[in-house]
Amino acid sequence: MKIFLKKTLLVLLVIASIYGLGRLGVVTYDSYVFVPREPYAVMQTQNSITLKWQTPEFEVGKVEYGFFSDTIDKEINDTKKTKKHSITISNLNECTKYYYKVSSGSLKIDNENRSFKTLCKNSDNQKIWVIGDSGKHGKDQTKVYEQMLKYIDNDFSKLDMWVLLGDNAYRSGTQKQYNKTLFEPYKELIKRFVPWAVRGNHDARRWAFYNIWNFPKNAESGGVASGSEHFYSIDNGNLHLVMLDSEIIRVDANSDMVTWLKKDLHANKKPWVIVVLHTPPYTDGGHNSDSDYDSVGKMKKVRENLVPIFDKYGVDLVLSGHSHDYERSKLIINHTGKSNTFSEENVVQNSKFSYTKPLKPTKDSGTVYQVCGSSAKLDRADLKHPALPFSFEMMGSVMLEITPTTLNSKFISIDGKIMDEFTIKKEKTSDQGKK
Image (cartoon, helix red, strand yellow):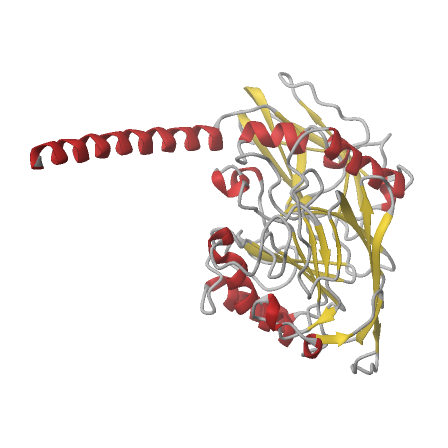
C-alpha cells in the first residue's frame, strides 16, 4: 500500500510539474508574442511624448510632426532597424497640439487625423472619459463607446484625457487580446490620446501590460517620483491624477506604494485629486468587498490601508472597476470596515448630487467613491452596499468635466441616458457640516 501511495504521489508530482512548465510557456508566449501594432502614444509630459508601434519586418521607423496637419515639417527616426519601435519627441511646447504621421515599409498605417497634445500647466476646462473592465470586444463595448462619441458630438477636440480602470483585455491580457479589445475598437481614440490605464486582475494573468506601456516613474508627468511604473501620478491642468496597481504590488501599510502615495499627496498643489485603481474598497456587485476571500482579500486591504490616506489628504474622487456594474457613494470618510459598520457618521454631506469642499485639499473633507466596471461586461449585482446608494446594474462609462473650482461626473449608460450625476464645488471657505 505504501509503495502504491508513493508511486501515485510521484505521478501526481510529475503531472503537476509538466502542467506548471506548460503553463509558464503559455504565459510567456502570450505575454511576449510579437503582433503588428499601429502607432500609439505613451509617456505624455509637458514637453515630450513617446510614440510606439510594431512592424512585421525590421526597418528604420520615421515620425514626422508639426503644428498643422498640412504642414508637418519636422521628423525623427529610429537609430537602428527594429520591429518594436519607440521614438520620443522632446523639446515640445507645453499644452500644445501637434499632428504626426508614421512611415513604415512593412506595416500599413492609417495616418489620417493623428495628433497628440502635451500636458498643460493650467486649464479652464477638462473632459476626461473613464471606462472600466472594457476589454471584452463586441457590440456592447461598441455601444458604450458610441454613446461617449455622441456626448461629445463626435468632436475629439472636446476631450482631454482617457482613463482605463483595468481589465483592459479579456480574458487574460495577452498581446493578441490587447490588439482585439483595445487597439482595434478604440482606433480613433488611440490616434489622438494616451490611454492612461491601470492593471486589472485579468491583465495581471500575463506580463503584456507593462510591455505595452511606458509609465512616468521618474515624475516626468508630474507629482513625486515613484521609481516604479506600478504607481505614479500625472499633473494636467487642474488635476492631480494618481495611478495605482492594486493587483501585484503590496497594498500593506508599510509597502513602497503606500509610502510613496503619502509623499505624493502631501506634495500636491493641484486643486483636484483623483485616485485610480482597479480594486474598489466598497462594492456589492459582481464582487463583494465584505468578503475576506473575494479577490484574495485585496478589497479589504485597499479599504484598511488606503482609505485612511485618502481621508487624510482630502482625495476628491476614487475611481475603480472590477465589479461589472456602476456604484457611487456620497461624500464620505473614515469607513474601513465591512458594510454593516457604515453609518451616518461616515457621511460628510448627505446630498444626492451636490457637494462642497475647501479649495485646498483638507483632512476629512470627504471622498466620493465611484465603481465603473461595466464598459464592456455586465454581471448580476445585488447593489446593496449602504455606502453606495447610487448604483445600477447597467453598462456605461463616466465622463468627468473639471474646472478650477468644479468637478462634474456623469454616468452615461449604454442607451445614452445620464443615469447618475454629481458635482463637487471647491470654495475658499466651506462649511463641512452635514447638509
